[in-house]
Amino acid sequence: MLIGITGTISSGKSTVAAYLRKRQFRVIDADKLAHDELLNDEVVADLTERFGEHILDGNKIDRKKLGQIVFHDSKERAFLNNLIHPRVISKIKDFKKSNELVFVEVPLLYESNIESLFDKIIVVFANKKTLITRLMKRDAISQKYAKRKIASQMDIEDKKNKADYTIDNSGDMTNTYCQIEVILRRLT
Image (tube, rainbow, N blue to C red):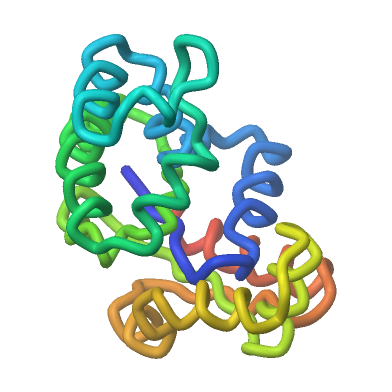
């Protein structure tokens, strides 16, 4: 089975993934797959042709510089997504071929319209105040910028309505881990 893990930014997807890894489940990070693609020579060539050499740090893509371009321009973000997403989707499909329970952490699962790749989907969420606080701390950004980043994503209620399972990560870790265990019992 291939299980997608998604949610909004700073909701705790990585916390859930880390717990699953600790429990010896196979967990794939789709963001890492995408970041690895930024090391691919073809991808680097396509991106520098589109955005210029200034997005490079040496011969590698400077993700912060690239991020500043694509976060503020939906056309450029679409270009990047159209370049990277098919490569990541292909790798995710390869994991589906295994005979084990595999979890894939995909922050923009619904936004990328790839829910059909997964047998089940878990949505991790937290209340807005918690999200803002976590994001400000994690990324060292202002409250205003944190709110903008959260607002740029699909509404969490829509994600929760589409999910097979949800995990409320607003409270303490013990509560979150208990919710994961309930889901694991249902899956196995």
